[in-house]
Image (cartoon, rainbow, N blue to C red; front, side):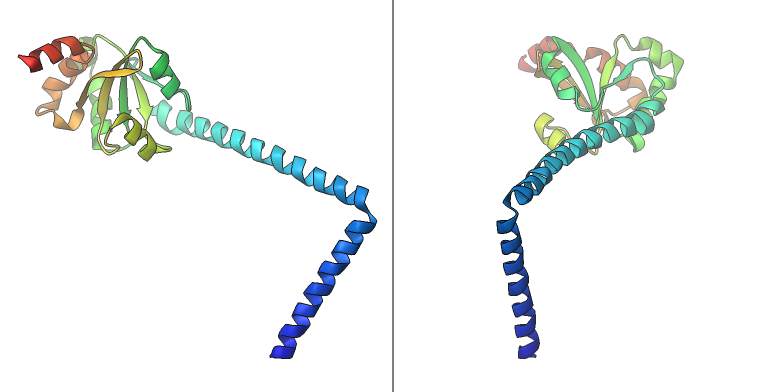
Length: 191
């Protein structure tokens, strides 16, 4: 067994020495190959990063955004939600996974013409699909629940969690309509 391992070690050593000698003899060619490999690696890395964003954007558009039929729900484009929240003077956002009973309830309520007529505003949808734990931590939301948050100039002003409502059919639309009224809610809590 020792001789077998020594033979392998000798072969590896001999191969390494041959490689060093070849590189030394053909420095220009070796440098050109090394430079080409570095450039290829950089191009490959950039391409993979861009392709990943493109694939995720297409997946969200195909699998998530096409299931939303309400004119009141505006899906964010992939990768642009955080910047849109920060830059907007006032914006209401629904944070939710694109599946589950609560999300389906939101869509069902908004598909009811009477309920949709009572809703006096549109809101944005931030799907919790990719990096959901990071998003949940950043915005302090539970990714398993549907949470509506009102932001003013990038700062959270008011929120409610849909699962906390006692009677969803009676309370959901009024609560959603009151979401931007953060000053009134803050004053009522202080009294």
